[in-house]
Image (cartoon, rainbow over all chains, first blue to last red; front, side, top):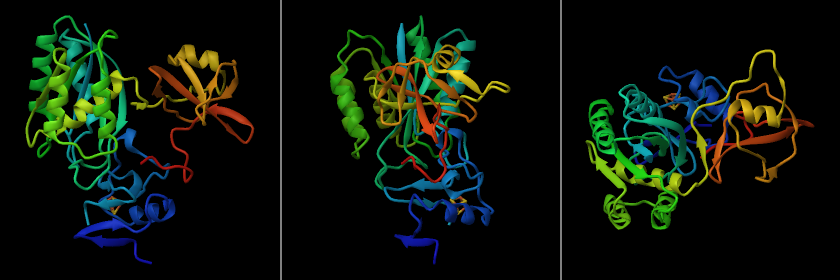
Length: 67
Length: 245
Ligand code: SF4
């Protein structure tokens, strides 16, 4: 399964907002991961796209600003 | 004089967040003797492609007290101009905190900003209609941050529910508490359960995970959950069980 869907040139996470394991796996393989500020962390995986400052939430998922 | 101070769109992907900038600004204002700040509340605004937020579109608002509103306002404006991140669109709102004022139209604006795309023109119109006691200013870029800044201040004035910035850490060697002890040590004014029901009994709770407090009904509120029969302050993050946006 691909982790990303291209929408208008943007890389949108295919797992939506509830795929915690996939978000952790993707971030663990990403050299750009950088933890967002404490108030914006949403899961307790130390490294996860959901906690990354380069994810931009959309209505149903997030887009990665580094892809 | 009591105020609500709210800033928005001051960051970029590599800078400190808006909440941290607000705390830094208020810290410097305190050192200069210009104002004393209370706690900061985070309000989630609308997530939509047409809104140019960085990663989460939230707005941060703190309460403050000053004896010199004019100098304090000038200080905030200069601070934002000098410290906002490159490429950001900072906005500042300073609103009088006075229970005799009618905030209803402003609150309506704040609530709309949580579910609709609003324009700067709408923000200026709402500010103008409120009249004296409200400062709204742009400090670079498109200045679009005035929308979130006004919304955050309005929601705070309306005692709307938001999360209080920061977290409370468990104390080493003290896992067992009562809610009344917890309230007096951490300044909690009210407890609710996960469904929002008020808790009035003095409960025995186990406090071993960091927790966050809510601003709800105008009070600092702790949420108590029942985890397998054990009552505890809701852990800051409950993995895989909830998501924020
Ligand atoms: S959001 Fe993007 S930059 Fe951040 S960890 Fe995931 S893939 Fe990497």
